[in-house]
Length: 564
Image 1 (cartoon, rainbow, N blue to C red):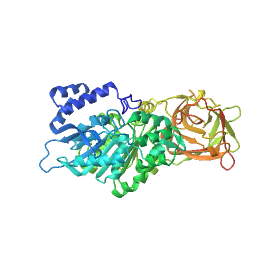
Image 2 (cartoon, rainbow, N blue to C red):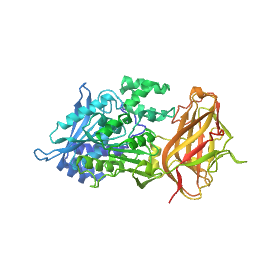
Image 3 (tube, rainbow, N blue to C red):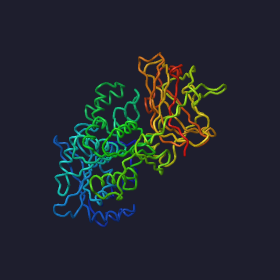
Image 4 (cartoon, rainbow, N blue to C red):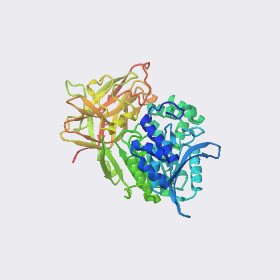
């Protein structure tokens, strides 16, 4: 459910998940044999019998300076000796109707590791009062007041405070650390670094993700400032007010604070993240000089940490326990020290585990593939290593609706199937070549890996203002005509560029993907994707010419190298 009580389209928990969390909550509040015994059906009774001996849990309401009430819970270790203090971890809630209760499955492990645990729902979210600020200044001051309240509790060490959060909680955690130097370590799962580029990429709105987030927030619970921003983004009025709103809420804007304070930051994201910008997270990680780790996994927003929030093994949460133990002195993890590197999985194998010292060590060198015209008798253009190919033109129609190739048929859920090894398959033969230009390599002679950053250069002549193209790179099987998406990026042209040929160079989302021998890379350049724009069947049909003039020939730079 959203913050206003409607159904969550993205992050809805199953009835079984909710029943388990409810049983955990009851056992924490009332650790009687009957309550704990109910957990036996999930194999959790033994764990919570141990918790009842060593921890104490209570639900609390925290009053902010302006009278806003934050719904929260506090778990503390029992039996601290006089004068003994323990580290503490603060858990701001993800964007979900149950708010901070999404972390109930983690509380036992944190507490058994010697931590005091304060989980809370940000203002306007779940049972907290106030209005949604989108991790704005009032949320920062709330985080400081939360810390003030926490360190006033008996046995909490004010010098060992960490923040862990998922999604909305990750952004809140990062921004809290920028404002309050008492935060000594941060772990953010499915984090954002640049809110503006998450909403607006290459002049193109991420409208589907934006509307999904607005629905989750509950528009009637949003602050007047945020409601004004919502209407401007819907109207495609991307002015200084929108930019400033996003900039203030972007961790990248506070890079100097993190570096000056040497704040240890663990970030996690996914290759097919549809909510927040992956390149922005990578760039933010690269520019940090404080202790840092980056984890990039198969799937979409929130997929990878979900089991960990439920108390099950998961790389993001397992790394977070290890991270806090190292910097705060607890014992919630496995006893191993963290590694300060780039850790990743390749698509679509969540069991893969790659480690590299830095992103630059991780990313493979780019190889240039030139876009070329179709051979005689064929409809699709070529991607060739030969030499720049000038003089061709491919014309496509923009009709307000595109082909069946899309970023993700379902936000978040498509990525979840990727983590199960079931990526969505597209039928490339069904692509309407009148609506999209298609270019492909010859079948690969050996299995090859795409790993790192990609870049596309095109010369485009749109006949109408605000024309959008969307480039998709696919892994296509010539034998079956089926393909999986590797990466993508949109680009929208300004009114001033209508009617004239404009050469543009823009990055595609980074990727880590193994293309099997005999398969082909296929580049599809479409004119519409519901992820980036509302469906519009009333827009007049117009033509977009994709060309390759001499001197600015079109190319795709892709880090493609044989597996070995």
